[in-house]
Length: 338
Ligand SMILES: [Zn+2]
Image 1 (tube, rainbow, N blue to C red):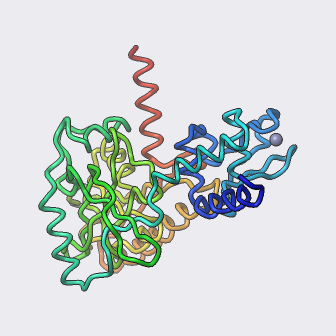
Image 2: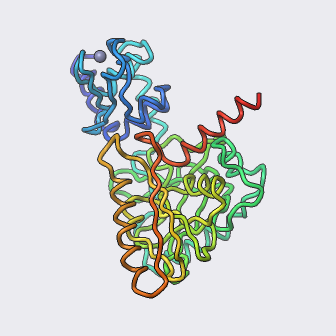
């Protein structure tokens, strides 16, 4: 292969890898602690205690070391795995080769009516989560197994995985089991589904493994439990299950920081606990949304006589959510029991 061909090949891989380095590096064996953007000893120059940090700042798998300087995904992969550039290139190519370029669940944006039917159809194909199925295996692996799962979750045995070729129509390239979560609007209507593709008991390693079926769910939530006087709120579904297990409270998952701010809470709920993600290693999005929600819920709740109490809980470690905290606690408990 000529030099310019090789350069073109490298350039093509870089373009396809853009914005996907965290998934790529995780799949190619780079330690999760690095990818959680924590200050660490530098794996590139093998020195220090906290001089290195993975940031993915420009979507190129970026990192920075106070001693050996900045670098990108390829350099990091080579250093961590002890491989040369060409091996790293081939690994990333192989990884990207099996990943759809732009996954989509549907071929175009359907009308709201068609979307409603599609949501119902997919939901009907799925079954309640029971011990031993793919969703149970996945959640068990994260320390989140339950005897009785919320009916807002279902297990789809083989959900189509679509890939869009350029600007053309998306076509189905595979089927995977999936965890489905029903997203309900304030009035109780199911407005969309959130799906998490699974593979061999784990989340599928693909950039779009977790996604909502369609937009337009502002203020809606996955209702993992029915609130009485009390309700817990958080971003992720796994976080919600962890909070449920740890506190026994009914939980709603808003799915994203952006939507957490907007969640509509029934007036009857007087005690609200918000379990925020700690994004102190990034731009504090989790904290900002949680406190913004807290302020709004306080204002709304204090219109009538019975005052509302709103509390915000943050995991201590930057980069952590409550599902991480729960998993660590389970691991410690297991070690103590052993
Ligand atoms: Zn270094």
